[in-house]
Length: 353
Image 1 (cartoon, rainbow, N blue to C red):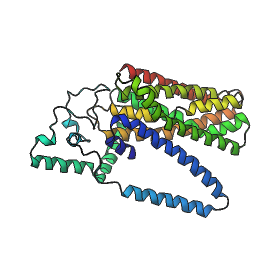
Image 2: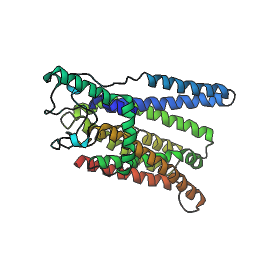
Image 3: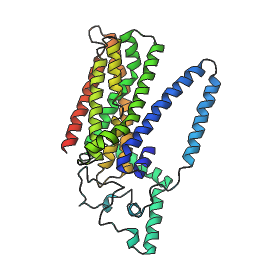
Image 4: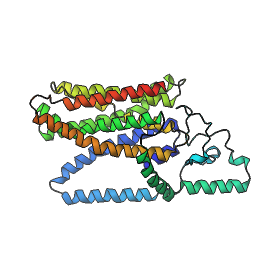
């Protein structure tokens, strides 16, 4: 829901950077929370529980200050309804990724509020406020979740490929469930040392996400200024992140000493901006018959399906490897590298679309 609100408010050029910052702060908070929890768990468990309850209360208080109407109030965007029924769509709108429907774009056929009477402007404003109200937004999201589950992969290209890539990334990223156990077995480390390595992994992820907006504005935007701009940059970051994930997770499967293992882990972790860039690209490539809320419901369902399948799948594969005498220990990671490789092929298909 928060990501949907961010996508509805921000222009496309700032969407990926905002997602990167949100994800970066999430990784920093996870490292800080793990450190505080480790210190308080042994001797001050009640203080730890109290801090957890306090964090939930603060989150609820922050959620209550979200205004019932959100979005930009400029005269251009007031004429655009963010949620549209299929009967209201103009079938003549181009459906290429660079010209796909976006709630922050307008068509020349949509009249500006300044060109209408005060009565019509008032009715339009009331209708937009009603559509922006939080209760109706929640109701539409819940209703859309049931229909989206049945039509998860029925979207036309490029949305079908985006949803499929999100599923592949979700399944492959769930290999993190067996990474601590694998690290302990491959390097012979105790779990305390493994936890330090996992903290380093989270810090590298946060550093990569915080660095991406700077790299984007300094190096990528001038280079891609004449090639669909933000959409081309998102695809490029997605492709580079998939390549880094593929090589890094493949190297992890060999477990050939600590230096190579840490190098592979750093390379794999440097592709942390994959999901944010892919979701940003999908937001800008939404077809005319689909709203932003529908797309983010689909992404949530994909993440849920990937969590339900990926975690048990990788744990079962690791169990089979441990019980087997001839299957190499790094086989699950090589299979995961194959999944990321399939994602690279999907990005190539998006670039040709």
